[in-house]
Length: 250
Image (tube, rainbow, N blue to C red):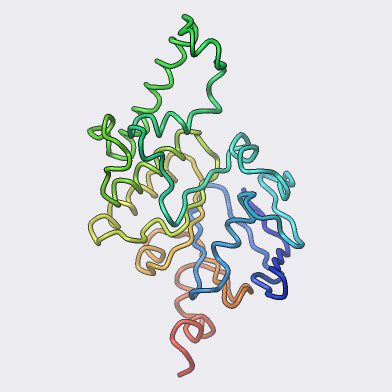
């Protein structure tokens, strides 16, 4: 589904990533872990078109998407969520998910302003789809709430619902469990597994090791901008270099 080849990213004289390569298999949940400053979010920003890599390539289903902008990647089926939740706070929960359906609509400004019959029909269809994804993430009862008023955990679910509204092939999640309590983290784990069961490939950056080891099929470990290890959860747990990177020598 996703292939990252020899990614290097330099910011002035600082090398954030150096020669990082790995693959994400279709229908897998792949975790990307590493100590703070390992370059995980920088890597996600390159994959999703927010940064342009100094060198290296990114391929989605065999197609070179290295320099594509995020909105183009969304039409190809790659979407993401953010470490810091990004919502339209003054819009309702339902309207936020409808924003995620922008690639599914064809009405322009004029037809929307005049409320022409086909625009009204299309908006009704998009609302129904948005309600489906609110139900999928378990927040249907919040449809009319203002997004900015949501507690943190519900905001995270809304961001995931909005991403899923595009019916992606691949969703990348940047620290989805950050700020969640144990109950919310368990609900998140079940949701990510449902996303995979729906045929969507998942790649996630995460610091919650229990979550990663429980739900991931494969794990990539970064340390100081380089790939340190790659393998199954058990292989990663037993890798002495990984243990040293997290806990220090001895």
